[in-house]
Image (cartoon, rainbow, N blue to C red; front, top):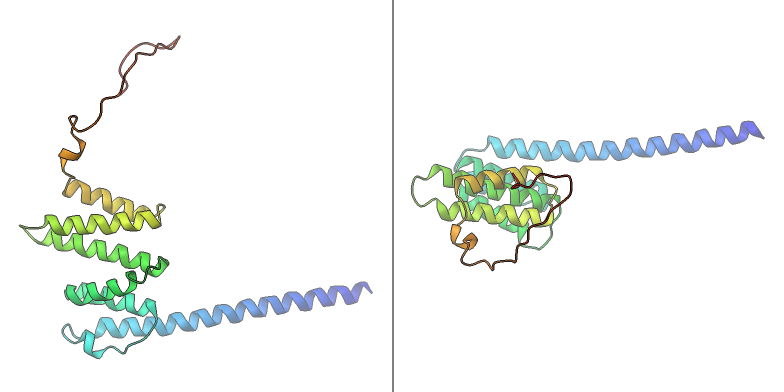
Amino acid sequence: MKRRTVHLLFGVLSLCCAGAALERDLRLRQATSLNAEIARIAAAPAGKEAAALPRRSARELQLAQALALSRAGNHEAALKGYAGLIQNGERDAVAQQALFNLANMYLRQGLAQETGAVPLFELGKQRLRDLLRVAPQDWDARYNLERALRLAPEEQEAFSAEQQQSVEQRRVRIPGFVAGDLP
């Protein structure tokens, strides 16, 4: 009786391991085919990316296509690709990556321009804020937003003392602490 139970448990465990291995194999095959498509996109000549690519419904491939177009300098086509991933209202991992890449594209364009870069920085900061509303734990987006704010600070009028309501202030004494200003 005990031997039969052990063999049954071993058989169930073997089936679970085989199922996990098959699932990993399927994911590996999908990733390999996606990587082959991405490599083909990256190897396409600079002016012929959009015409040479097949229309696949995979959102990952659309993201890779938009990234390749952005790196090639075809920002209008890349913007259309990113917008197609963002517009449907989903905020899955692909849409979050599209927001991040779109913001970085705007910021890079702003850095490349000598004059008139402020609107591009504002668009990049807005996209990063949109991303942080959905994924506040995204430290890369936080870092890029901080860098963008240093390059193009917000208008100081919104933070001026005249526009803010003054709040009643009181001095509080706490026994055992020396009175002084906070750092």
